[in-house]
Image 1 (cartoon, rainbow, N blue to C red):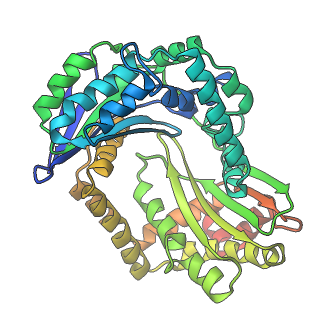
Image 2 (tube, rainbow, N blue to C red; image 1 turned 180 degrees about the vertical axis):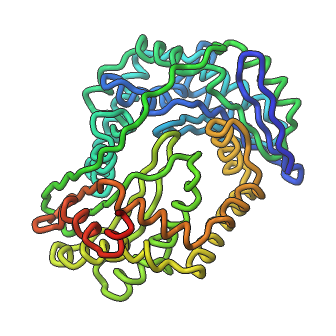
Length: 429
């Protein structure tokens, strides 16, 4: 693999990872904008704009866009996250110019037709409704909102029915001009792609974007707390979280490994102790979300009301145990899982394109697989135990639950149980 990077005069970065043994290419535009840059009245506009980009330009109808890419056997899609939006295509190598032309067209020449906008707003309202019908989705929305209350990073990516219905062509065009700036964009390509060809195409097709970077989003302030909502369901959806680590933090890889050791698979501590030994839930897992300036460590379980009383103290005890007893063997196993996932992603042009684009936006450069592997290998069991202690004791818990939640241990009780552990209390002094 051969990674090349060029920054155009307007600040747009073009990065490629050539995989010459392939006959296909994956490429796309990644933009450093997501739901966390939205003002309250803008909540959901990033996601709506991503949808509307495919609904017609000055020279292509929505049908034209779909037919042109599918006529050559390609596919076109997009996604919105909290910090990034991306528009991507998979095509045969010889169709790279077409893919670049379509991507540049939808990002610079979309008309945001009024009838198309009404239809797409209706589609997103259905998407919001489907999310509201899912207790797990609701629990995660509450979780995010409780961790970062009254902040854009804590609001749902989809927006609300009220905000989505309030957008029009002018607000979409204004947001596009405000946030889609060349220095905050990466055109990434992998597979059977020539770097010089993609640079030439980018110079031709993406010159219209402003060379002035967009304003930075406000710094996130983790708060934590609880949101417990009683609902007539068979199971309670429970989420517990703590302040995590941003991408560039020294302990980023340590906390990723901690999430894997605790709840990253069937061999993990939470799964073995709570699911396998005691049968208190069907599934339980932990995770870590990293962002540019903050992070959130969390775990999720779904269980019946009669098992809640035993589940919560057992989870607390496992968090305590992690700060004291995580072993070299567990860390080695989790390092291997993370490293394998990294290597497997290198075999997929689409996954690799996303990797190199996000790394460029976050770090300003592409991290080599060897560099990442070395950082992962440098993490020790002692590092993990320290990070577990700092995470679970040094941070106010975030706790959300929806369903039959009467009698559940609340966030304050959880924090007190962690603090009262004699080993953790001594380490905190």
